[in-house]
Length: 206
Image (cartoon, rainbow, N blue to C red; front, side, top):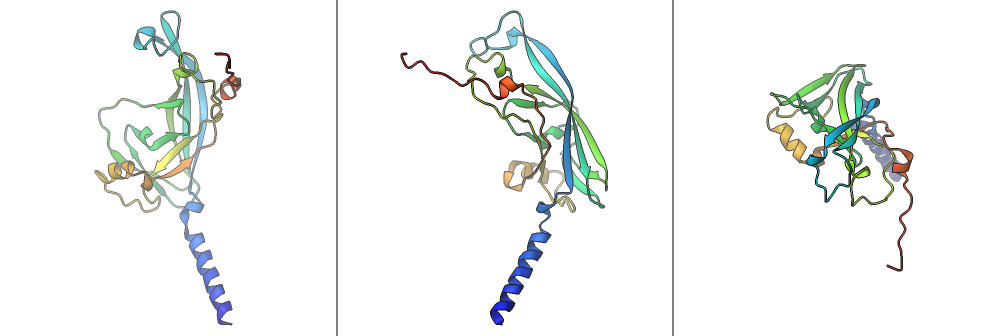
């Protein structure tokens, strides 16, 4: 009988502990939307010719205007630490060939952003595709990650964000063990050929 009681108590404690972990149910969702795709040209004098193969006097780079929507699904406010200007510091990309472009500003400091119940905060950014796809002489013909996802880095409790406004943010951003990342839906920014290129062949006679 004592054994049964101990088992029941253990199960109760396990269930209680599992239910209390906020990580299992995230109050924030992130939806990203592709708004525009276009090309930007750069003078070839900005690029090292030993690394990039190109003809003419300019190179073209693919750009993507992206809308980021952070939505609070709860009936109480949640809070996220972001920089007032370089808020992209808190965002990751799941691959190394799509980069997020920052913006210039005169005043930049960490601030606590409140997202009220049912509210959606919208951010606009631009991403660029690495030039290695079109111009890199060392480009390997390897398959690439087909989807691009953005990740929001959260560094404090979303409900009670106790963090020093001056130094706490910087320390938490330097310590990746403090991070909890919320990932977005996927975007398909590469062409089918880029995502799944032809297999590499080797000449065994050379």
